[in-house]
Length: 429
Image 1 (cartoon, rainbow, N blue to C red):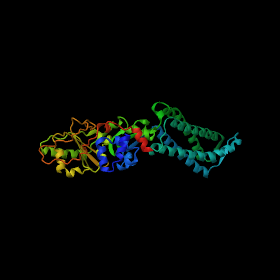
Image 2: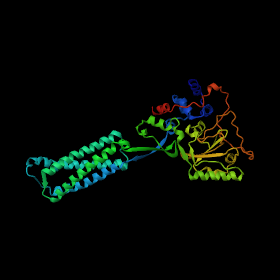
Image 3: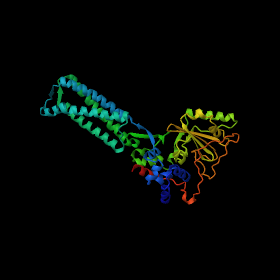
């Protein structure tokens, strides 16, 4: 690898350098591996940090599952908040109280409860209402495992202490205004009932089974490398991983081959239009599937597509042609002779369309060679492909293959796969 690196550094022409690497390497993975420690070579090939970031680009949709107890606590606190606010307003106007017989020494305690603890508890209730709103509706706060249990215990203990003190105050004193006395009696009954419900129902609810984990945040992968895929639910441990581990989870191993892509209406209409052209030449229509796996030439990005992004027609191998056009552009130019020569090739039997970053890749391939994830056979020295014999003008294909007398031992094995973790490590440093 070091020997090849030093030889490539001597090549001044960017065009020739790309030709050589395209011939020697099938996937960009190997190119990244070759260039990741050679900034000069990266600059010649226009490989920068954005190129790495695009290679590992993805978007998620998050969905949080809330349990009914969250709503219970929210409604409960709102009721308490409303009655406390009414109580405070009336207390500030008619707040005279008297101590019951035998409790004259408790005056300071009653004053502290009415003039300090009441307002502190009111603010505490307001804070819990806001937290519950964030938990349920805004999905900003996510509590898991023991944190959820601790928050519920804290909530329970605070209310228990306050309600016990409030009950003592009710025993020690009474207001001269009957409305305030009625509000106090209602609040203490409501406090006792809600505490019993929390202790008997809600707390065990969080301490058993699935509920022990509290709120569950679900993550759905919806876009990968600029491709809108069918949403794929990621495992729960995703949220606990660091960035490198997240990349490895999404892009590593066989995981990336599990994602699906669905044809949209415009793409199906384009296939129908292409098949109508085939019908005019008495050819069988192209076969396609509404749902497909992601194509291998985008999973392991091909050097042809990467080094020559402004081309429209690629021949990756005997039996695989790819058109690359801006979205909906091919519909307007289907009658172009070069395009017709491929569309009407009677050896090609299948079609696949996928959109990436507002570009459409339209693939024509032979089912004998191409599997469901659009793989293709090994590269051959002879890249000539016999087009439809009924057409006189050959198609002008962007065929990257070049014939160079390079010994086999100097060509990197095209099956050499880049270690995703090492690439991600390099990307983050």
